Length: 319
Image 1 (spheres, rainbow, N blue to C red):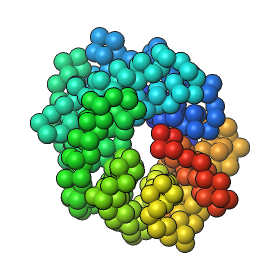
Image 2 (cartoon, helix red, strand yellow):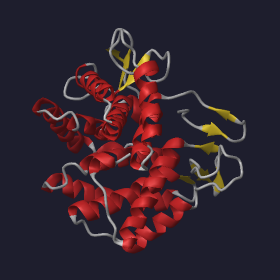
Image 3 (tube, rainbow, N blue to C red):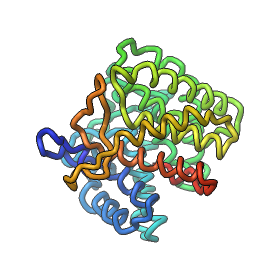
């Protein structure tokens, strides 16, 4: 799966292992086991770097990302559930093993390592090049491994995320970059859904949803990402249904309508049905984005389930 399609240039970006992992999870959620199998087979047969024992960032890339690896592992676990193919499950476990040992730092997990030496890259101010609370969503892969050691790794990531999340948004003064950080902060909140039956994660989830909602509404007239809106809606609905957090129906409805406004009904099959990445100053940006599409489609499906009283969701289905 390409990272995105540039409608102004008529060209796809480079194939991404992370985005292919998201695609596998998305195909499973919407009942396309064949699509999930094709995505997972690509990851197994073409993307896995056997000498390094991990998934690189992109084909031929000398870098591997902690976050991307967790998303790929979750996609492979989803494909294994849908198809019964044990090779997908085995590869997912191998990816989770790399996640545990190749990225382990001093009290945190390195965000990026160089291949083949597997040495950590120097940290940078960009959120994707520094350890942070957003890594908690990738750590959900450990919960699908099914043993106590992997569960302990998730608990370590949870403790680190709870200890550091408060400054993740506060450290970014630039408003457009803050919208990008809202996207990443939602990853932290999504990870919290696995532990929100406990007081501290529950409180962080509740306050985090309110914080994201306020900042998203404040920044959106300047720069708006569709995935942030979709992530916020998913978080509200799942937290309400799974953990009885109060749901602001009016805000959720507004977010559902705004999410839907990003969908394309263009006659071009490369665009039709997909969701645009975002708007800047009210104008759509020319990026047809697979992740925005997956998040938005799932958010709207969950909204329909909520409104119709036919809720049917488990956390392992989270794309």
